[in-house]
Length: 365
Image 1 (cartoon, rainbow, N blue to C red):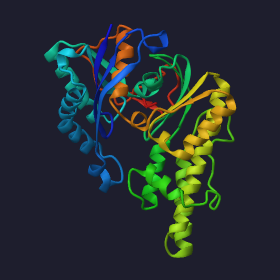
Image 2: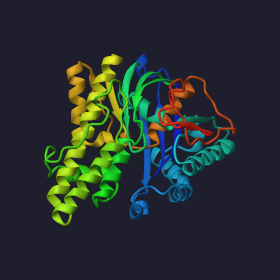
Image 3: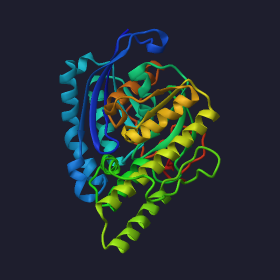
C-alpha cells in the first residue's frame, strides 16, 4: 500500500509545504519501505521581520496568507504529483502563532472540501518529535530533545501519539534566549547563527555566567536568568570601556553559548538516567549549533546510546515533518473534519502539569 500526503506548515515564520510518500504503509520499523520526501518547500520571512528584532505575528500571518497556496503549488510541481495522486492532507493545527496556524488550517480545509481528500490535523511538536522516524526509521521508544526558538523539552516517545514529558524550560526557550542575546549585543537576527559566529572568536571562560537550575534535581531548565546575566555583563563592559568592544562581545557570546550547552548536556544526562532508551534524538533550530550538538553527542556516547540529529533542513520548521506525522496518524485511523480548529496551545503530554501556566486557552506547554 502506498500513502502520499501533502503537508502544510505555518506555525511561526516559515511558510512550508511538502509531499511525502510511504511506499509500504507498514513503516520502516516494521520492515517496510522507507518514506520518501518527494518535495519540501520552505519560504522564510527573515527580511520581513529583520527591522523588529523578532517575529511580528501580524506580519507573519499576512505573509502566510499570501504565500501558502504558492508553496503548495510548488511542492506539488516538484513532487510531480497532482491533487488526485494524494491520499490525505496533513496540516499543522497548533501550537503556534494563531494567525499563521489559522491560515494553514483554512487552506487545508479548502483543499479537502474541494477534493474530498481526508484531513489530518497535526501537532507541530509531534512533527519535530517524529522526524527521526522519517529520516532514520528508528523504532520506539527513544528520547527526543526538542530545542528551538519557542520550545525546549525532553520527550520520551513511545508511539506516534504517546509522549511523556520528562522536563522542559520554565521560561525562555534556548532559541528565544539566543535571539534576545543577539539583540542585546547588537547582532543581526536570527540570533542563533549570529551568536555562534561571534562566539567562535571569544573565550567562554573570560566572563563567568550562571548555569541556571543545575543545583536542583530533575530535568527542568531556565534560560531567562542567563539572558539577564548577559545584559549585566554588557552594561558593565559598556560602563568600563565606554562602549562594547568587539573582543568583549565575542567573549560574552562564547560564555553564553557554553552555559546553554552545559545546561542542556547535564539535563540530557539526567533525562537518559531517568528514562533509559537506545536512542537520543535532537530536533529544532538550536540543534544546528555545533557547540551544543557536540556536547549532546558526548553525553550520548558516555551513556552508550545512539545519537541522532536529522539534517538541518528537517530540524527547523518544515512541512515534510508535518506530512510524515500526518502519515503516522493516518495509519492509526485518525481523520479530522471541517470542525478542525487552530490551536495556539497544544501540549504533547496532556497528562503532565503545565510548565508555563494555563488560562482560558489551555496549558501553554
